[in-house]
Length: 497
Image 1 (cartoon, rainbow, N blue to C red):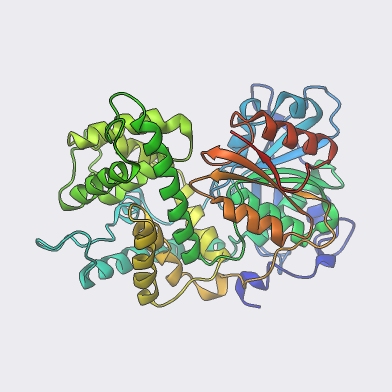
Image 2: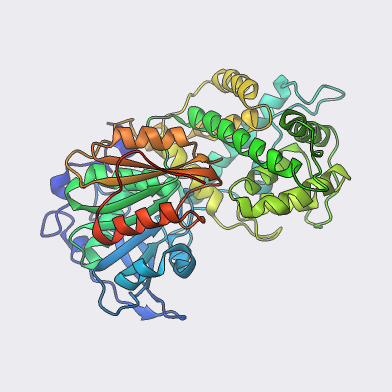
C-alpha cells in the first residue's frame, strides 16, 4: 500500500492503549485549564507518522464543555466537517449545536484535526495566492470568446494555478502534507478517546465528520459506543465524482430556493406564475454576465466580482435555509450590477476574514481531500467530466468538477489506496441524511449506511445541510435517544418536514 495508505494503516494490534509502540501516546492525560465561559482547554500529542512513532510529534488542540450534571457518563467528541473545520470552535458552540439533555450527561469535546486551526495548521498560499486559487475562472476570458467555451489557454491557467497550490504546500508544509489523510486523523481521535478515559467512543460528526467517523469505526469497531454521522459522505467516490454529485445536489438546493423565492413578493428571480426553470436560468445568465465583465465590488479588497467568486457566494447560501433571505438580497443587488453581497457570502464559505487573512480552512480541505481519494492525473479527464457535469448541473457542474484538479498534482505517495469502510463488528452506527441537502446528497447517506455493516439510516425530509438541531423534532429526538442510550431508531426511519 502506498503513502498514507501504508504508514497510517498498520495493523489494529499496534493501536493498543496498554502497550506497544504507541504506549507513550495512549498513556497521556490532558492537563485541562480554564479557557473562559465554562470551557476547559488543553493539548495532546500524536505522531506525525504512525509508522514512525519515535519521530516528529504534533500537538493537537482540544476544548471541553463539562457536563452540566457534574457527573458525566462519558465524553461526546464532535467534528463539524470541512475537512478543515475546527472541532475546537465547534465545541465552543455546544450550547447551540448539542441539545441540553445530551450536554447534561456528556462532556462535549472538540479538537482541531492535524493541520487545522490550532493543531499545526497547514498553509499553502499567502492571501493573494489564495484569492487567485479560489477565483480562477474555469471558463475562457480570451478576447470576445463565449465564456461558456473552455479554451486551451483557459485550461493552461487552471493547470498553473493548481500546480502552484501544490507547490506552495510542498514548500510551506512538505512533511505535514504527506500525513493529512483521514486515516491518520481517526487514529488521533482514538488517542484522544483514551486520554479522555472513555473505553468506547461517543461521537457526532457532520458532513466530512461522517467520513472521519466511518474511518474510526472501520479501524476500531470494538471501540464504538454511538456514532452519529450526519450529512453523510459516500466513501466510494473519487474526487471527481464527489464534485460532480455535489454539483447535482447544489442544483437541487438552488431549485428549492428558487421555488421558495417565487412565492414571495419582490423575488429577484421572478414572481408567482414564473417557472423554477426560468428562475434558475436567470441565475445562470447572471453568472455568465459576470464571466464576461465583473460586477461592482465595494469591499475595497481588490477582488474582481467574476463568475467564480459569485458562484461560490450562491453555493455558500445554499447550506442553510437561514441564509436564503440573504441570498435573495445579494441576487437582487447583483442583477443591479453590484456583486458585493455575493462576495461576502463567498468569503463566509472559505473563511476569508479580510483581504489580508484567510483561516487555513481551504489549505486543510484540499490537503485532506487529495490525500483521501484517488484522482485522475490526466487533465483531459477533468475536461470531459466538467462537460458531463455541466449537462447535469448547468449552474455548478463545471466549477465544482474543475475544483478537483488540484488533486491531479498531489504527491502520489501521500494518497491513500481505496478501501471499503464497513466496520465489521461495530455497534449500531446512525447515519443521517437530508433529502435536499446541497453539499452531501441524500444518496450518499444511503450509500454509507449500506456500506457499514451496522449502519442505520435516518432521513430528514427538507432543505439545508445536515439534520440534527435544524428544526425537526423527530430527528432531534432520535439522535438524542441514540446518544444517551445507544439505542438507534428503526433503520429507514423518515422524519417528514
